[in-house]
Image 1 (cartoon, rainbow, N blue to C red):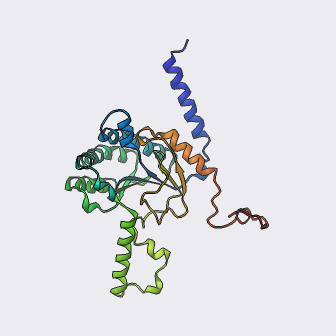
Image 2: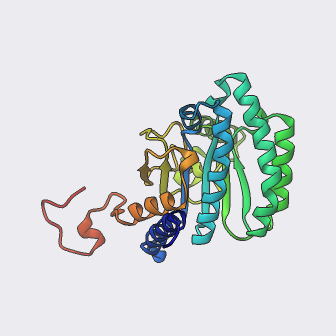
Image 3: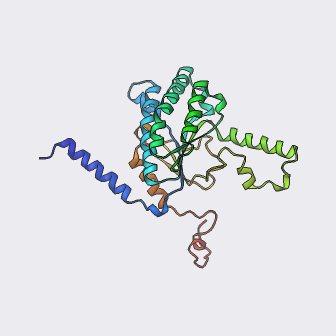
Length: 272
């Protein structure tokens, strides 16, 4: 008789393979964004402090980055630390910053091995000097990689980003470098932190919260939103595959009707 542990492992692998096999490789989202939520609750459920949850959340980051790279997703943006998170207890923030420095230092060799380029968006000036130093070195060491782009949103909020863009546009107009009548969506996007990246097509939020929490508000205009009750430290590749399959089962109309997309005659009952 096969050992019970091996049987369970085999069954789990079978489920994972079937989920991955159900993905249409021709219809993958080019850019996936994730709000990694639930580290603190995961730790508290286990009788541990919140930093214990953040530490285990790093393993989920590794797993999901690997999963996206295997699928050849072009861009993955992870909401790692918001500007509002600075208001958390000082001990937790300090621990998070130390974890950030250690994680970046340890993961750069893996990023290079997998040809992944690191990017950062957010108000980096608010980070401790040690964190800024590690980030800058990681950015430089991975800048020639041509595989997946991993975008870390650190000390980031969308309202901060939009206000910053508006101020820069105002200065450009004031100096005569930009005429007000030429300001369009494409011009505005050039002043955003994400100007180098396409907008996300799929946004995933873990932990059962149903809000965007000041994350890429402008860029998520036409993204498909996937919410899961799974806490971030428990989120693994099979959860990612489930979100992608959910994305692929949706009809993306961008304001058009289903009939327009299928080149069918319009009817009075066509859906929005």
